[in-house]
Amino acid sequence: MSATVRELVDEAYDRRESTWRAALETVNDWVESVRAPSALLSGDRVRVVDGRIKDRLRTGEKLRRKLADANDEIHESVEVENQVIDVVGARVICRTEREQSALWDLLTEVSDDTNLSIAEVRDYSATPKPSGYRGRHLIVEVPFDSEPSVLVELQLRTIMQDAWCVLAEEHLFKPGQALKSDAQQERLSVILAGLMAQADSVAGYIADDVGAYLGMGNSAPPRAFAEADEPTDPAIEVTIRELNHSYVLAADEVGRHGIIRLETLGLTPDNPERSAFPHPGDKLQVRMDESNNTRYFIPVGHDR
Image (cartoon, rainbow, N blue to C red; front, side, top):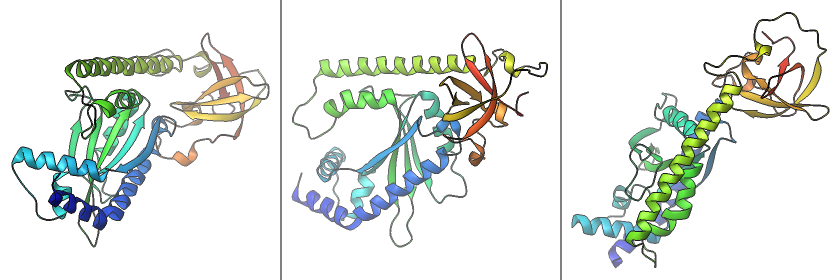
């Protein structure tokens, strides 16, 4: 890149990098605040990973190409951010497309209690890039009182979409690398992206099947949740192990694991009263019921 571009990029980084990092932290905190109330988007299913400030060299190379393509030039460092809007990048990894879609819907409906705004929406899941890349991106504008606002590119990827980036995009489609991809490699990359998209779909089907076992949707509820005579089995004590989507995993004193449906606790996966959810280590008195597929624990005093 030319000395002029290099100097402008260095000046922008020296002047703004601390503000960019503050903006990145703000976006990460926002995602966490949106995710936290929903059991569907629990920390084991939706993970906010470390973001990044784009490497100066890559920013300079991208800026140089963009200016060359447009037969344009810049003269002030403030224009660097206007030209390269993904200098600051945040990322969220979702277990499957179901969690990705749920979080996407929440984030694209920015509430009035935040001063952030969505500057641009880029849905590459619906329309993949020519390289095969899939993912959903938001360009989030973070305001500051004493200086210009910062644009943060927020990427929402499934595990499979992120794996494709590790296996293909990071090696084949990043600028400034010594090795360049050829047509055959690019075709293989698109094939790999399609295979991983199929894997995402299969993961969704598995989750749906688990939901059916738990009595979700239109499937018939297990016997324990239907109207029945007063139970005669004595109550046992169980310990909460894990909070998962639509259910709680618990174990009794001899190590038998069972599922407690949130409905039996008077809760739902999207209940905003997150503080009312049980926590690992909590003790409950329950009675046990087993279907062909699952062992259920029904909290005493909560069963229907």
